[in-house]
Length: 302
Image 1: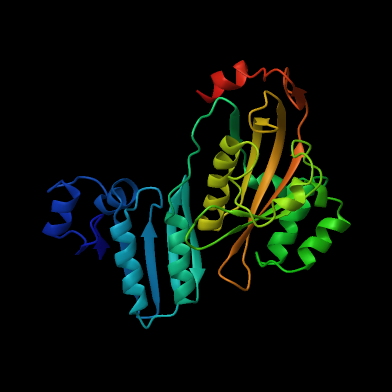
Image 2: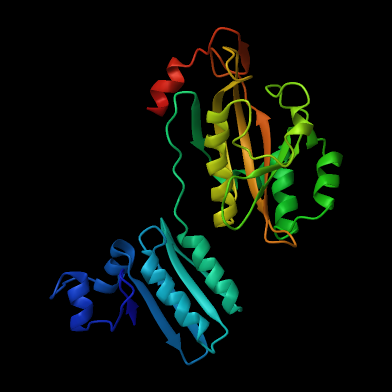
């Protein structure tokens, strides 16, 4: 069986399938084409013992996803194989129905694409690079996250202290309604935060910080990581306003690692560990009282 983008069940090679495909006499692998390019979902039950679901996460439509998840909720089968296409076919075996439903949601969550702002530049990096960089604190926190199966407990803070990474760590809380993230912890190594902000901001929303444009920009990343349950590794260049109404900016170039952590409540914690990168040219990791030399950054982000 297949599920159309509108959430309708159709049989493979049936007239209903070809009508939904828009081709009554295809001379190609119509099922694979429909799944990879048109948002169909392929659904198979093997020997009443395993359900196989085949999807292209970037193409699947919400009605199709919900139809499949609803079918899983009524099934007595307890073994699931999810095949999904991201540059190549990958597969996962799950032995829990709820996990399978949750994993489908994670795979098909809308991919967050940040807006281009003149003062902020993002360069997404390959997260797998951190697995082999033994000298990087980002690698060590990644290992801790994997060994903890993404569950947050007090040992995370102890680990950060022992590894001397606490000063460059922030932790944010994100609720299931995906409202604005709130600060749960701020290390003391962020030079653009003045005074007692490290303490006074705890419990406040991320958007409510001295540079509200920057706060709104980074909030979307934290919500995306919490929603998808997937880590994120980026290089960032940002000119951050030190205080509202003041023409003073701190321009920084850094790498950051965002990790989602499960908790005993319905809140997801997102950790942000950053490390300064080498100077890329004028304006990198410097302060300016009169503005920010970001013509190069503005051109790249546009």
